Amino acid sequence: MSGIMEHPTIVQADKHPALIVRSAEPFNAGPPPGLLSRSWQTPTELFFVRNHGTVPAIDPDAYRLTVRGRIERPLSLSLDDLRHTFPQRRVTAALQCAGNRRQEMLAVRDIPNELPWDLEAISQAEWAGVSLSQVLEYAGIGAGAAHVAFTGLDEVERRGRRFGFGASIPLAKALAPEVLLAYEMNGEPLTALHGAPLRLVVPGYIGARSVKWLGEIAVQARPSDNYFQAVAYRHFPPEVDATTAVEDEGVMLDELFVSATICAPSDGEVLPGGPATIRGYAVGHGGSPLARVELSGDGGQSWTAATLLGEQRVWAWQLWEATITLRPGAQTIIARATDCRGHTQPADVRQTWNYKGYMNNAWHQVEVQVGE
Ligand code: MTE
Image (tube, rainbow, N blue to C red; front, side):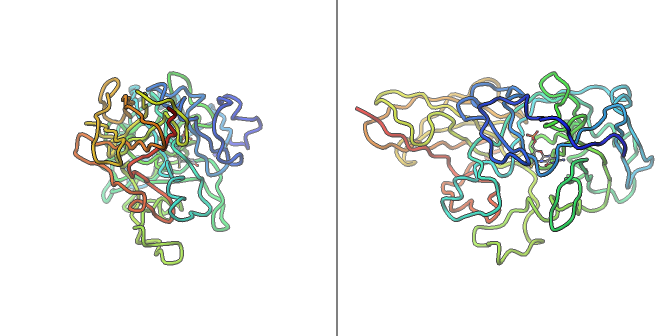
């Protein structure tokens, strides 16, 4: 399609200077935990960024979204067509990268060639756009349709080939009203780093399915054969490593796993004895609301309920806080969550370890040094 150039400007200029940069090129960064847990809706300048390739500069006037495949009516839609044909829909949803909390897994066994995210590869925004389902219904779903595939206008290089980042989701999820073709984030037009002029937002699924700089939608019988759906973002058991993995046998990741994460205090922090406020975030399996978050200061023998802050809402994360009494010496604080569907977390990171370092939802632990 016309109107795509390499981005001429420094697109991360609108980002907060305190972001933890995991790689400069492609740009991958997230907010420091103390800032992350401060607001339910993450300000765009703090929102984490996960890029696998270029950040394309797309002329919004020349932009067209192609819809093809097992549909009755192929479409080529401008941004104005989208805005004027379909009603606007807003959804507040957390976006979490499958690699969030990979760093804890590195202590079990090395995971080469993957970003060492700590707990900052997650953020939440209010997204506005149109429901994917309405566009698909307008195109008319054809016979044999079972998956909807998406391709971005960025350029990624893998295995000697250059192509746009891609993903797919099952048709049933694609027809769910929360899945958006978003042109706004936090009440402003999408920024270049977050997928302007149009991105997919798939609430409840790993961030990799929310394709940015969306160029094409294809309705098809099978999942996408794009590298990032067919090869990467597959989940293997802990006993499989890079030498023994059979690519096709990994499970294609979709729904997020339940987890609670401690943002403050941070691991290794020195604190005075007595009552201390512990803060963090939690997500439910597949975006389900949280039922409870609990903390333990004695290795998981006893648990104290944290206060869930704000509403318990589907697709949204939940911020929480709790006060626990610290005694002098080294003390480990553990957090765990249970969601409204009854999902809870494995205790140990050795149970969640996998050779690509995805979906670490083991109990989160920080060790603090407590003075007299
Ligand atoms: N879309 C394209 N086109 N290219 C990408 O590299 N990264 C994916 C997803 N969509 C990616 C993409 C991944 S792995 C994540 S976690 C989210 O975008 C991150 O979205 P954000 O950068 O807006 O936080």
